[in-house]
Amino acid sequence: MEYVEIARAESERGELVLRERREEHAPTAVELRANGVFVMDTLETSTEQALASAALAQVADPRAVVVGGLGLGFTMHEVLADHRVEKCAVVEIEQALVDWMRDGTVPHGPALLADQRVTVVVADIAVALAEAPRASYDLILLDVDNGPDQLVHDTNAVLYEELFLETARRVLRRGGALAVWSASQTHALEQTMKTVFGNAEALRREVLLQDRDEEYWLYVSRVTSDA
Picture 1: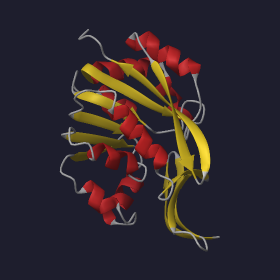
Picture 2 (picture 1 turned 120 degrees about the vertical axis):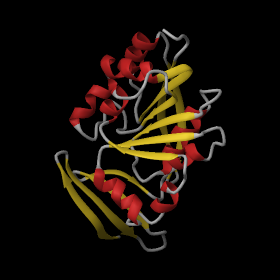
Picture 3 (picture 1 turned 90 degrees about the vertical axis):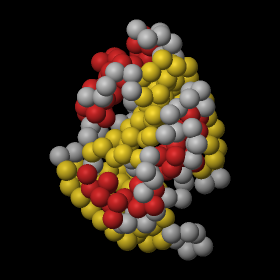
Picture 4 (picture 1 turned 90 degrees about the horizontal axis):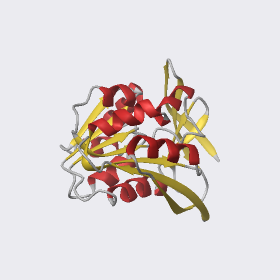
């Protein structure tokens, strides 16, 4: 197996690396790593697609959607495939990653970002939602980590606490939902979401990754009133 670095950037959160993975008898993959930790690649996109499709199924009319975390764009792509979606705001904290998607360093990036329904905001998702108007979105998909037990950055821990979840509830419309992706079952998150929203559901999802059966979780809370 051979790795070829495509791009590298440094921020206050550390190092972000984009590299090409070349393997005999296998398609070439573009791989994203943060501080040396594998985040995602362009071959195994099942989890990102499953996050979006499962979350969209929880809302009757997801006209306005927020995706927390751009990654390599596959969650956003699945959201845009839903004809009900009229606008999709993608919040990504790393400017370099947005630039790589826009300038073609990530080959499929420009085509995805050309969709007129997409707005990319370079910001911390907690700050972006705090500044959003009340009841302005139908669905928030949070995919910045592999859940509260597998953080990309330690500072992301606040995204699974009551203060942030209350902010998310404020910007959701009645009938809207918050969906949080997790690579492992987390009863603590489920309980915190239930405390804030008055309800929470843990949806188990089985995903096939490189001929392996993997189990992931989607935690969903719905806004059932205007309060």
